[in-house]
Structures are given as C-alpha cells and as structure tokens.
Length: 223
Ligand SMILES: [Fe+2]
Image (cartoon, rainbow, N blue to C red; front, side):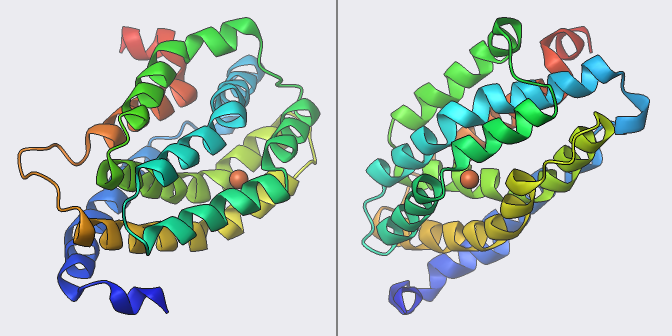
C-alpha cells in the first residue's frame, strides 16, 4: 500500500519520537480527568456541553485544514477518507443526539467559555502548515479515542443511555489515529520542517483547549 512509499527514516522519527511524545501528552490528559462521581451534575453537564460546542462545528473544519495543508500524495487520501466517513455517517448529528440525550446542549455561556482557546486552534490550523497540522490532528484522534469511555460515563451519570457517538468513536478513531501518524511520516518526507519550528505548537494549543473543555475557564484561571 502507500506506506511503502514513505522513506523509513520518517517512519522512524514518527515511531521513535513523535508518537511516544503524543502518547505521553494524551496519557497525562486522560490521567487528569476528574472522577465523574465527584463532580456536580452541572459540572458534568458543562464538560459535555463544552466538548460539543467545540467538536460539532469544528472537527470537519480542522480535518479540512489538515487536508488543504498536506503536500504529500500519500497523506491526502488518508485525510479524505477521514472526512468522507465524517460526512457520510454524519458524525455532527451523532454528537448532537448524544448531547441532547444527556441534557447538555451547549448554551451561549458554554460556547463563550471555549471561545478564546478555540479561536487560537482555528487560526493556527488556518496557517496551513502540513506537518504541524497533521501532528495536531494525530494528537486529537489519539485523545478522543481514549476520551470516549469517559464521555460515555459522564452522560451515563447524567441519566442518558445514548451511546452511538461514543461507541463509534471509541472504535474508529484507533484506526484514524494510526493512519494520521502514517500521513505525518509521509508529509515529513516531502516537506521537511525547519528545525527551528516548534512542531508541537498546534498540539499545545489544542491541549489548552481540551483542558478548558474539561475544567472550564474559571477553574483553569484560578489554578
Ligand atoms: Fe467523528
């Protein structure tokens, strides 16, 4: 398949360095998640609402930015497959059903709470830097795949049994994450990044946004 076209050195950089760093950032985020039983109903609702305020209208935008920024012929079909599945199976509607069932549909305050950090991520991806955008999206897929069980648990504690969104993403994002790391290796091969560039700039901005989703802005500023 297309992976044969990727020079091994770039697979090595991704496998030996970038992926382990991403795994470690994801692991820290997952380990920091608050116990749903120790949160108030309003705190649980807030996490689901902020997650939805970010994801419903932005995931396809972000993945499109990754597609538009990718120069590698091997990376582009991987990103297109991801977008096709997202639109064909209407993942935004799945997420909306999940959130309405958990009585956590985002209000204006939920949307405004994530506004600044979301804008930072949108503007960064809009710079269309292929390698950085692919690393950012590989991080995101790796995160949400592990976050799904927690999100389902939050909704369950809120009394909802709707699981289509979390079931689909807990499974399909494992493959998506692996494919995105493969796309990243391909992109590094055709568009080697300047050593002075911070490869993790988008990952850091997205991690900050995820922390705001989890903790809200007030708690994070007070911390
Ligand atoms: Fe999705």
